Amino acid sequence: RFSRPKANILFSRHALIGPYLEGSGFFLRMANGRHNKLINLEAKVIMTWSEESSGQRKRRFATLPLERDKVVMFPLNWTLVHPIQEDSPLYQKGSHELEEMEAEVIVLLEGYDETFAQTVHADTSYTFREILCNARFKPMYHSIDGKTVLELDLIDAFEAAV
Image 1 (cartoon, rainbow, N blue to C red):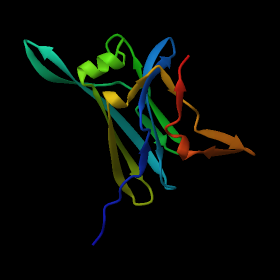
Image 2: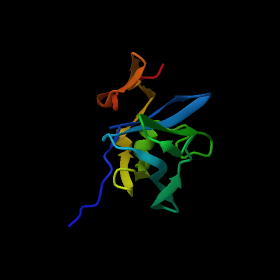
Image 3: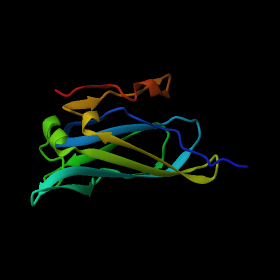
Image 4: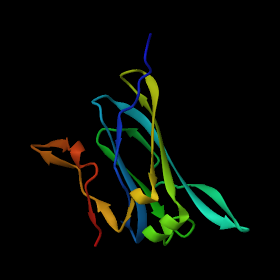
């Protein structure tokens, strides 16, 4: 009997909305919790929310376009970034509006695990309670003697955006 390999992707506890380029962005962070190679990773981010239409509450869905939705290798961490523009359902939304919308963001990840020679999947979601506004992630890696050190315990580290 064989068990199917499962990716050990670590996702940040919170997703963040904060400054990005000339506007704002939606951010979430992930890292590989194993020492194996994951290649050709692809991410999809979908937002769902409730809105009133014709006197009824209806659930809406929208794919959030990402700055980069594919990476060839996953050696360190990966911060997914959705630039918030006028056509984004997150445009000019704060914590209060996200709560009223009962917003949730669903994250789907697919990649190829070289160790098991199989495609692996991972997913998570962030409800409006887990989306923090006016914040940014702190770095989770640094260099020592020319080597990059990834500190997985900093995956959730964030600070207020100024």
